[in-house]
Length: 306
Image 1 (cartoon, rainbow, N blue to C red):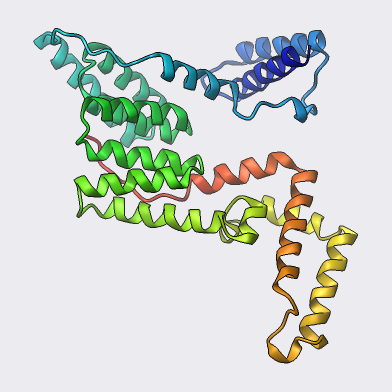
Image 2 (tube, rainbow, N blue to C red):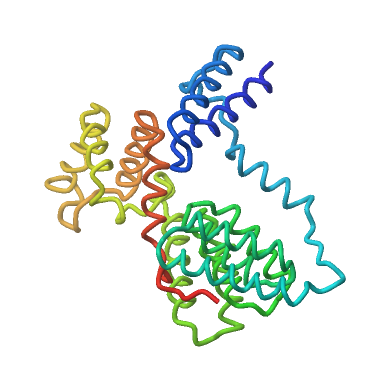
């Protein structure tokens, strides 16, 4: 029954995400809430059963499975002149929606263009950009892979793949794709800037202190949710004792005469303790803060679409 419970928990998580989707009306949201209650009752699970969570969201698992089994098949015959013309019109409509920040409509237009002309890498790449704006990074990487499969020299597809991978915290892969984009377009300042961002984030993620938190501390200090959580964590007696000991060493301890803390490991220990307390008190905050940072991390927001 353990597997069934985990699957039901993933389904419930997916349905909860859909409830917050702006595309659903109040009646549809209410129907999903009823479905969630039925599943939780049947499988005896609740939202607090975090140990049942899968490593990836159900939607991402599904999309990854589709990608593995859905090899892009390009028709042997070319689309008609009428289909090509209509596909271009739909692409242009999608581009206008992107400018208006109406990303869901943009995805719909690009999808219709793809249905008319499966051979055009631009349509996949543009849809990847729209998916990224919606936070659908797995879908974005799928579209970038298909664009690259159609046209391996299409630098923009590598650049957009890099953006999506950076947003997913897959920094080494992102760095690789940005470098490939620069091989094809060496003077592109956007690729250069985003490569530096990915390299910096990778460096921060692998540093001893950042490893405890899993994101860029400097990007959080002005975030109200983080400040509130930090204040709560600092009430913890263990954290207070750690900080008190560190301050004692800095002011009058044996290392005071050589510049402060007696041992950098104390700072690392404090950072790890701080991260553990945040994770225990509010695990959801970690993912919220990651998403908040990702949405502000990248250059290229003014990038033009093909």
